[in-house]
Image (cartoon, rainbow, N blue to C red; front, side, top):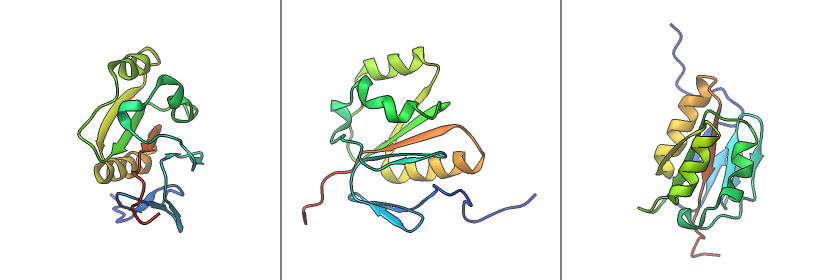
Length: 126
């Protein structure tokens, strides 16, 4: 059995924080969507509670088995979001940004169909 300490996937998350996420050598400082096929760098989501089914379009585009939402609050998306994804046969997991990034990297490394939505808060320095 071969064990690798780092994911060799192109879009694996290298580092994260409350105001930024790094994929490869690129740092993104706003909410974004990441999957194996692409990175959507301008996801206009500021709060998980404001998430609508229309906002899921970039996450669903890659036809994932599961969507992981990473955020820094104790809130959850509306039940309509989970219900909508259930009709699409897509699982939903919500967790902290760090846990979401680590879980995404593991599933990506296993060649699973996964999409990651990261909801970043605006930096106070901006």
